[in-house]
Length: 212
Image (cartoon, rainbow, N blue to C red; front, side, top):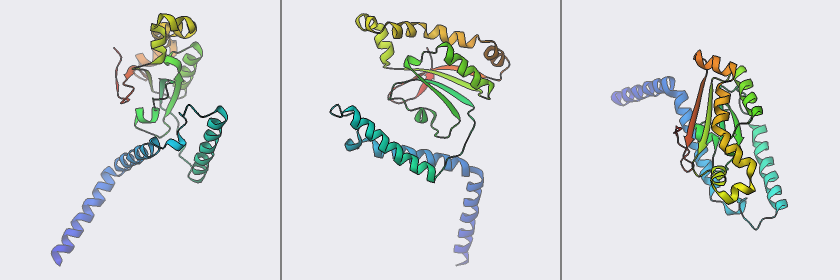
């Protein structure tokens, strides 16, 4: 019996040690796992599928309102922590990309710009610069595989139908470099106070890799 109590005491001390040393990390990992489970539970439900081509615009709109009201009621009952973003992410508007899954984090440490083809315009450059002035330390600019905007720009027939989008995709790199050259951005990058990265996303896995 004394040995049993000894082992219980040792296990209790080990549990306390793990909780103190790794408690927050364990919570973070478990939270991420539960969120992913929630995503997968919803993913296969056809009766809530907004993708049905038979649905009319009013039906889709009403479904959105119902879902929003349900989600809002949960959020009002269990409010989330307010945080100031330290990172900004530029991502394409493609619905297959989930910025929470890309970051592996649902906490609100991120400004997110969703843009067609991830193409910055001058107002988005200014918005990002304002975010940096307000405390953002990392800006991640992303492009992704199987991008509809890139496909349109590369197709001679479709590019005629969408000339502005085609032109914007062609200017994407110049716009990115233009952002890097903005005085405050350049100064903070040079001082090591800011990092700006261009990353490529695999659309299916959402894994990031340095832009080629």
